[in-house]
Image 1 (tube, one colour):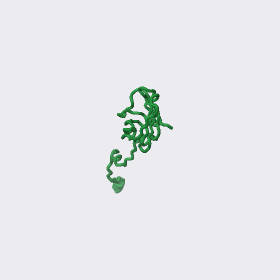
Image 2 (cartoon, one colour; image 1 turned 90 degrees about the horizontal axis):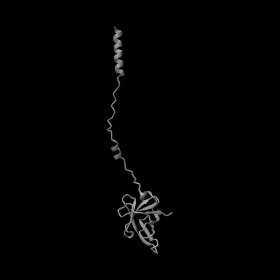
Image 3 (spheres, helix red, strand yellow; image 1 turned 90 degrees about the vertical axis):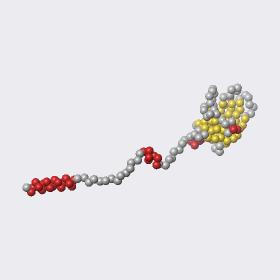
Image 4 (spheres, one colour; image 1 turned 60 degrees about the vertical axis):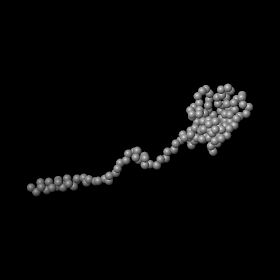
Length: 152
């Protein structure tokens, strides 16, 4: 009868020795993606006309005129925030009217506004051109082209 007793003992010992050890892993608090993103430094760069385009230089075009063929307009924007505006009504003005002053960028960095000397004119700065806007910063309404192209 020793054999069955020994066999039982071997089976019990085998079962005990094969029992898996329970490993306790350290408790790690899981964070949500939003929490991770909030903890990272912010390196956002807003791309706009002011910081992304080669905007400084001279722009020229013929703007619509109610009682003449057009107003020959040239606007030079300088990197130091100054401008020179020249406008001449075709078949009316013998010489161009020249205005000098400073301009400011709007909060979006896409629109420049001339000072009082330039009648607070607004232009949207786009790739290779300026688009004239109304006093509210909206595109000009009416017939004609309100775009000044960049001179090469």
